[in-house]
Image (cartoon, rainbow, N blue to C red; front, side, top):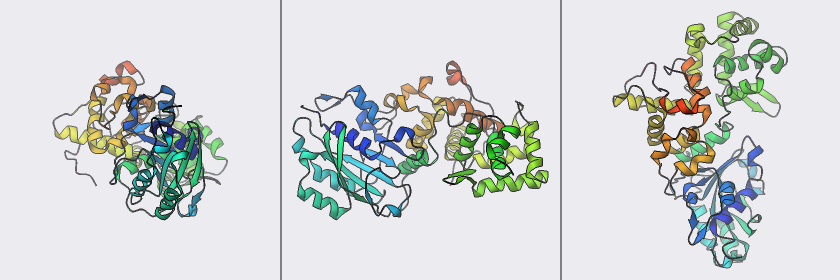
Length: 414
């Protein structure tokens, strides 16, 4: 049984206990600190199946240090004062032992978790159940830290519930992870349709008389789920329990449609005439493309890409390749760049255990999400931000040009 409750094992059991349905939940997300990508923990080799349980990975740097895991969304277990937050941010600090589970330093884990409460809402310490003393539980209660007792590699129990605490401005790292969770995760399928009209049109379908799916498939495209997903990601529509509702931004799309066409129905008739048209949106419908650009630029990945290209342009690089864009994006906001560009199964290859970027891996086209270099890049081309559309051919990903249509010439954004 030696090493069965080493720290990576404890962390995986705690993650599975707090967030048991991550694969099927659109508003929960968890990332493990990149130090767990190393092949061994002391003299114990980390098995491949355990790596898969801990994935995905990212660099997590908070003011109080580097928590072992950062999670978004309300945990499945009891939370004190749970009504104080709807989508809380939680950290887990795991403590284990390679040979003696009772020797794990649970008190240190509790204090480390407490040190992050100025930046997150919930803090947890996880350790083998044998190491959790009454004194440790008392300390955790005093510090509002939850305690998870790990019994086996796949079983854990909530020993002390955590309490939701207040938090000020979120750090760059947490904003990146919150972005990933609250926008339903930017994955390979995030933008399954690549034309901005398909997302603007979903806002019109929500506002139109009739059932949204029927209206959308009649006037815009048949891929209702794809249009809906993109509209949610871009902040045009809010997914509520009672159904989809327009955000303030989505309502502005409807106002624009009425101003341009007189009514939602007339606007939808115009959208219907654009079906199966490959013409660049800036040429097909310049004013609608301008609106689409205004919507796109409010989206965090768009801002990251544009700022990276502006910085490259300032250094004399007018046309870049995706690897150069990603390197520059990582200098601006590495956690967000990883979330936006890199596929989850390949993060272990791109991130070093120290949280740096293995830049040699950026010349491997398979590490990049197809959604970013194909559909989303085409989206930015159609609204006039980029000079060229994307590609779904992995052999051409590294030669596909990235350039701004109209670079400003400076990169001081706020």
